[in-house]
Length: 239
Image 1: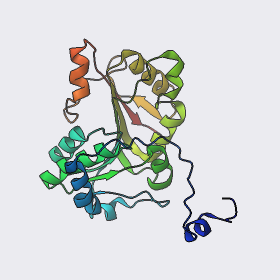
Image 2: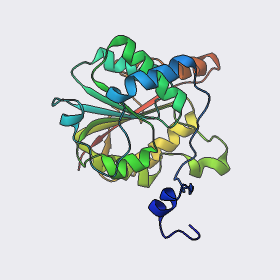
Image 3: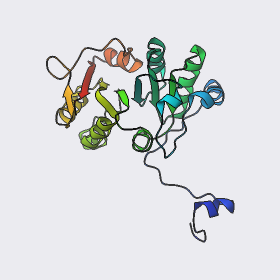
Image 4: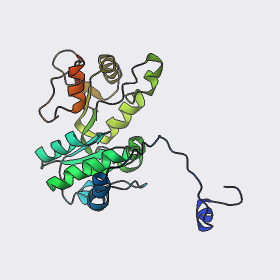
């Protein structure tokens, strides 16, 4: 801050002070369509980050089961799920701005009213904005596998993350993960099988067939072309 006592004083003097963030934001380059969608649909479909808990009944103007997806990419599958399940509310969190724009463009074209998007770090959103025991399902599809062993500690699915998800799920709510990296699937299963308050819903082994509500994504198609399998894991909150 230097000669300034606080952020507000610096801003009043016209000086910008950079802030430390908990993640690296991937700006990317917006297409004209994505930029137009952000301008047109963000006021009604976007949720700004705020240090206060959301009330889903106010956000969506109704009471309905709420599904939250972390890292929705370009949003195609999230929009498809929301379109196919008008009886549910969907919230997507993504830090890649072009992805947010693409998602809002698709949702806007379909006139969806049951989808909202956030452009922020999911961990901070969970801590500051998602009420405990409020979500019916949390989705994490094809996260970065950090496939090199020395990078495994960077994988998002860790014991602390599992606990963060657990407390935000309703009792009986589901945490659904999918990956096309077998080693990451094994890692997910190892973490989640040891996580307190969860049970694996698989009838045999650790993995479940792809549920009908999850569309086949471009990542899945890519994996199939490369000869990869795809593994779905669904865990239910039990306590």
